[in-house]
Length: 375
Ligand SMILES: *Cc1c(COP(=O)(O)O)cnc(C)c1O
Image (cartoon, rainbow, N blue to C red; front, side, top):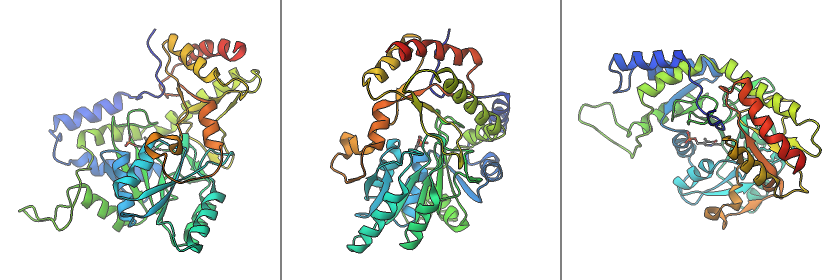
């Protein structure tokens, strides 16, 4: 029996063919036709307007923050419940992340806290420079009240949709809520190129500027002319070819993740006091990861479950450790209470990859059930 990972790449013959076609045409370098094709096909498949393919989601976040004008000394509202990359990118431009707790119904950044924080900061003359939202575990944040607050204060919104490709909220696709939004194609995401990211916007000028900055801000001149500092953040053509293949498959891949969540919720339905990461009916999550939430009365159960699954060669991990609890960010401001920290203490991410077979899912359930029922 092979190891079951949390969310491994799910590749098909299509990705292989496109990769080999690019290779055989020697489009290993430079930026070849697959890059532009990937960007165009991404826009149509995901429902965004303009896109530039980058080397990672983190690079996309870095450029997004620069493009909306966040700089040294600025303060940016960031959800505490996220992967470190969201907060790290804020520090790359010399700005300071201020962490905000989650709301219970989605685990995403609490819109009421965002609105209050923006109002209070403006009232004391120390306004925030931007807001970053995260579509956690593949579920869109409740963006409308956040957007209203941002518009009221003329503050840009960046949507970190790294985990949420293919998700929607009230019919609107993830990645269309931010002034700039970003996706990740890291190896464990619902769609992957092995490593990569996409910056998207409805504003073509912003995307053009991101493309310029991602290629060392090189001016169109034979002699390598530069008027500003740039970055080496472009995606490789070979990885774009893999991305084109993945793009032809999201509906089924996302459906599969939903089936896996349904299998876990059904299997654990009779276990008392057990829940899952909340899904708000206004949205359609891509179910990137299913997180089982264990009873508060048994604080050691998450660790027991992870250990028991590891013994059966199954990968499971705690939910993201909130940023305000991370040693690197302990001196930063945190607004909120204990929603994210409770989810971290009680949540365990279960294998959720779209390549999982029925017997893989059954293996996870069989290894987990005894721990959940006997403690
Ligand atoms: C994965 C992830 C990123 C970073 O993407 P990379 O492509 O790995 O750089 C950023 N934010 C969130 C919420 C993520 O899950």
